[in-house]
Image 1 (cartoon, rainbow, N blue to C red):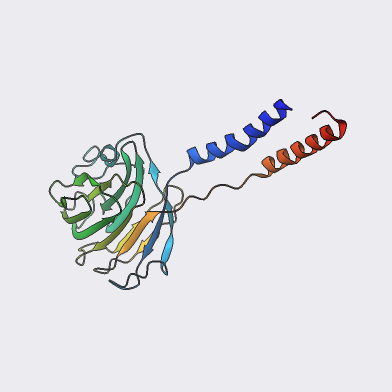
Image 2: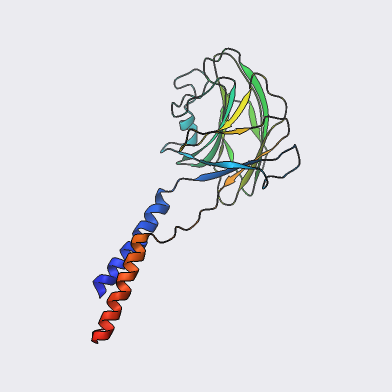
Amino acid sequence: MKKLLMLVAIALFVPFFAQRSAAATILKVSQESKPGLGDFDSNILGFVEAFSTNKTAANYYQYSKGYNSSFSNPALSLTAKQSHLFFVDAIDGLSLFIVHSKPGNLTGGAAKMSFNLLGDTAELKIVDDLGEATANSTGSLFTSNQGWGACCTDGLAIGSLDSNWEMLVKFTAPPRELNRWQVYSSSTSANISLSMQTGRRVKLNVAPVSTPEPSSMTSLVFAGLALAVHRRTQGGIL
């Protein structure tokens, strides 16, 4: 009987913890329909999965490591005249990344943005280029005023994002030489498109994690246990 109970415990708890430990961070993406309207719950655009690394957020950016004054990580295939938004689970926590355009773009460009962090505080993990983004004294409001040449990208990373946080992100002026804004996911090539309309906020937050239901195998183990207990009770062994 003790061996049977031990098998039940293994069947129940090992798969459960394996699933939880392997689970990647999932982010919910929504955008209000008009600047300042705040109707995020009615405009959920989808969910994305954070990229994962055993490096720090700053090292993941690989600034100037392959391309001068640029994001150089080959994990993302960048597109010219596009702003890229994604998340990275690094060894120093979860960070939001923004990368404008790609190395070797033909036009350069410029973008002004704000990042309003609610329910948490953070810092600028890296700024591409230095001095083009700032944080307020409480680590809850970040602003960027970035301009890049034909050689390079611009961007930043904000982290670490912990506990029950949400972030509101927007362009504060019409960008120059950007024609698309995309949210990237590590698990799919289907990106989420965002509007770059001035003042139209994007809301980002961690999606709630649901507890996995018992698998069919676990259910079979329960059934076997019940049958064994029934037989032993009838036989007077228990």
